[in-house]
Amino acid sequence: GAGVSQSPSNKVTEKGKDVELRCDPISGHTALYWYRQSLGQGLEFLIYFQGNSAPDKSGLPSDRFSAERTGGSVSTLTIQRTQQEDSAVYLCASSLDGTGIQETQYFGPGTRLLVL
Amino acid sequence: QQQVKQSPQSLIVQKGGISIINCAYENTAFDYFPWYQQFPGKGPALLIAIRPDVSEKKEGRFTISFNKSAKQFSLHIMDSQPGDSATYFCAASRDSGYSTLTFGKGTMLLVSP
Image (cartoon, rainbow over all chains, first blue to last red; front, side):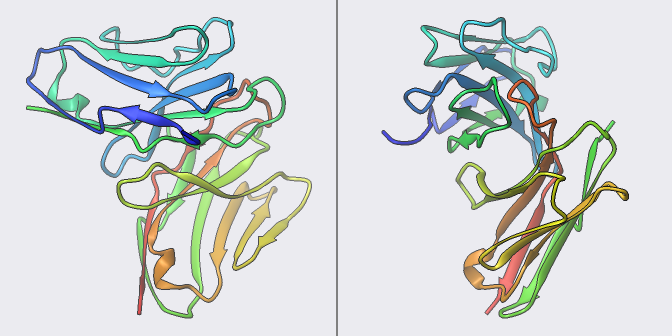
């Protein structure tokens, strides 16, 4: 596909369960970002991957959140022991090369997570 | 601490009117200011961006005005159309790929026919 894809598009889970959210960036993009979008709160930065460098995890809200990026492409965001306040839209974005000047970030459609 | 403040939260404009959304930032190190447009069920998409070497940038009906001394920037949508109805986010960052974007909370724009 030409754009960033995310799966699943919707996820309903029970409080306390773990969830995994997947992001496939645009082919050739070396920078990948995860954001969380809560109602009325805008986009909150979570984590940033650039090539083989150590990820910038400064936005992760708690140690229940983790992410990995395998082979410099696909990324998985994992939320352990989900809480109701984790309910939000989780957005992934990628850009061509996150090392120079700011480049356009291309966003996927998001995963809508609902924790009951 | 919210580093980018966006207003209004929502906006209703008649077709053909001018939509104006304002943002203010606190970090003087910011030097890249994009606006993103988001339709329901979709991810945000870059609309227009400005760097502080210019005070205004225009692309079609969309214009960014930038006031460095006031640390403010705004989006103007001229001749607003119903198809412009969406949520608009301003953002700011240092103009470096190592710098992540800080977003405002968004403005829901409704353009009435």
